[in-house]
Image (tube, protein in one colour):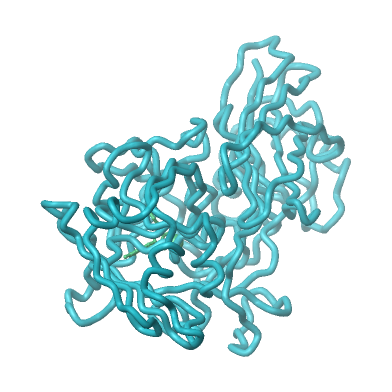
Length: 455
Ligand SMILES: Nc1nc2c(c(=O)[nH]1)N[C@H]1C(S)=C(S)[C@@H](COP(=O)(O)O)O[C@H]1N2
Ligand SMILES: [Mo]
């Protein structure tokens, strides 16, 4: 009998968390359910996660244990019609020079970095996520002859090769986070459409290049120039050479920020083709889609850009919160600019098994907050009842991520969940569950959690 429950609970948490929760907690999931996990439910939950749960008194009803879910707090899930496909195990990327990234899509190629592979101070190229919207162009044979044009609302249109760009403008190197606008999308309930990123559509690399603003100034923008329109050489999935895969842009003020760059090197190496080499934009703190890869033209325009990826609900978030799953009112959307605050636990990995008797658990992680900085990272190992401040490391420069460390005490062997949550410099904290639902799922930044088994 116990065996049967154990198996079915595990399966149920995968396919129908609400029913699983009702089975474990003994009745339909409600909001505040602390302290109800006892008797048969506690035994079933313990069997499902693989150990006794020292802090079970604090375990909220509706919580899918981290051991059974991908790392973030997921509340009760509405029943889907038709039912979503049963989750398969992760599919790992096979790509020259890349580590075990998790494939989210193969055409176009999209692959994310599991949180525990983001444990390096600087994300190595081998671990850096990939997000293509179309087909990457063939690698350029002679990078320095790559040509870039600045035109549109300018007095002196400019076409310059990469070789000349390097000679004519002052270079800088900055370590900065690049994060996909849809990072965290998989945590939305009901599911939002698009690539189902967990927290791994982000990385922090050292980018070498010139200030975008210096190059734009060389073209002498007219007073009418207020927005950029970015273009590159990747090919639309249809194969139609006239169709653009993506063409996004930013307000001129953001383009002129000294941290916005045209880059040709990543971690000291020539920018790899898959990351947009020879030349790409890095517009830090904003959705990765404005950091155009294979960049060959920027047109300054006198209005908000309307290229692919700029209209409808693409890269837009709600102005006033909407009912999750409802039909979207197009008038209620604004362009997503600065990305929301996020902290991730990069060590230990979700599901880590530690030796019996481990009482001091060392944690490491990263945090970042779009255009803002991270003010504080807090950690809990008792399902959020008590929190402890993590130590934030120094950053190298603006838009660098803030690495953090903490040591937490575990009172006994058993099953724990480590939860992390960051607060940004405007005092905005990550929510428990993905908030501000929008149809294409931008801004999902619920707190991260990992399961740890001691003994
Ligand atoms: N030309 C071009 N630039 C692009 C894209 C693209 O598909 N084509 N994808 C964008 C998106 S959505 C993201 S998140 C980042 C990803 O950069 P990466 O693949 O180097 O990690 O590139 C952006 N720049
Ligand atoms: Mo993206």
